[in-house]
Image (cartoon, rainbow, N blue to C red; front, side, top):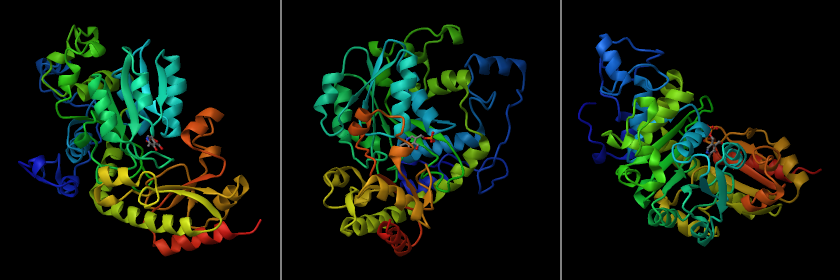
Length: 431
Ligand code: PLP
């Protein structure tokens, strides 16, 4: 589709058209360029591409035409300036952090986030000399108190996995802006079809594409997206000298001199080039198929999840249900402020009567699969205490709101009545 002006179209339209301009054979499906490298027209062109005098394809560790369509499409849907697509959500988060923080720096993260991200922050980054401090998502005074001159970023999830907490996104972005620090929002669970972080002042959005974007549990992927105008924060900011001082790996190039969105350009030119967590073109192609239907899917996920949350809330053998679309949820007001149509995606969690009851429910369900994934079209259940959060200390588990009785559900696209019947029989099963 030539001359598509992204600002003129809704997310559902962009998910089908953005980033692909019918080049070559005018195929309606985006072509799969399963190629590791690209031939140069001349040695001069090759040299220019290596010195960045000309931007173009060299090797698929950095860029590939199929992956580029996915990157442009995701940036357009999010309303961002540019994105960098990588091999997984974890790689996206790791690269976003490495882009800003070095040995001796610190980062701040919300206490309610995905367990794997917390493990990356607390254990892996520590070994690289980057320290991490958590702040209380429900008391943002703790965020402002934790900032110092070595703080390089503030990280949170718009809708957290597995606590299903909603951040006061605009307030976090305002605190980050006040201190000239980059804010990063993991928008995996909400997706851009329910929440747009840049509208509320967030600087960078990251995703695990493995979840709702793929939607079929078949492919891993990740993306980092930067907002329009982020260069103004990076250029001449003493916190981010890496964007403003000569880079030896590119013969003294200063990133700030490039006329490009700097955050994602540096991810491609530095982190992907040198450490190579690149997505395969085939996986990018699969993610493009998933993206086409996400607007419809996320509505059905949300409708089904609300019906199931209401069923669980009314059940005497269930202690507590966390789902922000329930009017009783402490996050309902934030949902109304930040999410489209008060829809809250497909993730919910609840407390069973006991550890044993939680274990029994996992084992007795027939339609729900016991799986450490979310965002699949099929319904999934997991016990975070035994799996995704098993590496956290007692204190960290408490801060994250995970107990031995917590169960997380990822509600799929099946008929809601079938899912409710399955949950009912599992919850009511006698010892
Ligand atoms: N962010 C969130 C919110 C997640 O739930 C996950 C994985 O479950 C990740 C990031 C990591 O993504 P990936 O599994 O694609 O590495």
